[in-house]
Image 1 (cartoon, helix red, strand yellow):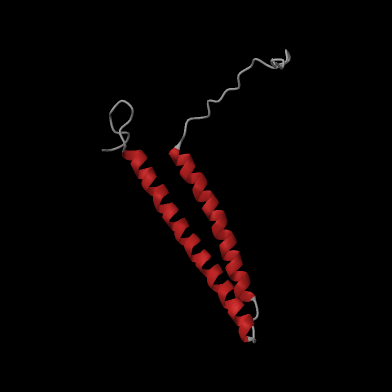
Image 2: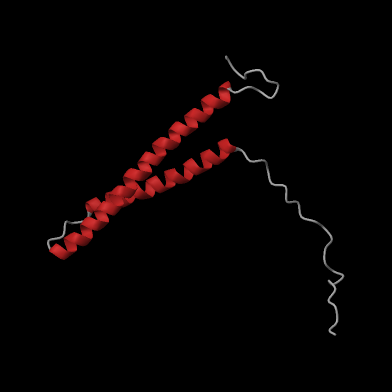
Length: 111
């Protein structure tokens, strides 16, 4: 029978703290919105870059150009729509937080 393995005596007995900060949906929404704005900036830069390219004369090259143009344009449109939607969600969250009852049961502001 092989020897049983014991942990060496130098292993720490400290238990790491696994209690993360409480989840804040408002902060999560703001963070996600910031990431979407970054994507929107990239999409708009790609859209401007592809528009600045010379239009190809060759039929095969035009097909590749048209595909790239369609892809970049769709990505730019979709990210612009997501940013607008994120703006709406953040505004709705602000209204909700303003009118929701406080922990004591009374409304926070003017209800």
